Amino acid sequence: MQALALIVIAGSVIGILAILAARQRHLADPMARWPRILLGVIPGIVGVVLVVVPQMDVVPDEWEGAIWIAVAIALSVAAVVGTIWRLARA
Image (cartoon, rainbow, N blue to C red; front, top):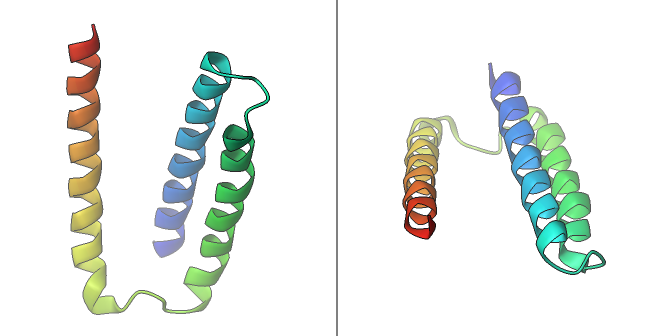
């Protein structure tokens, strides 16, 4: 189950980064550095986390429930703020 959760998280992070980088390249200078860094370094870090977390019990078992709740709350807040921001821009 933990491996599936890590794969979903990694896929989400890489997908979001790709969307952000594509939007930034379209709106700004095509030779800007940060989209290339975003698509190169961050997925590498996510890949390392995918390898290290199952091998080592990095997150104590007592914290896992609280961390999942915090992640769910953070994603919900981000979705609400993004929706409000988009509606305010329209």
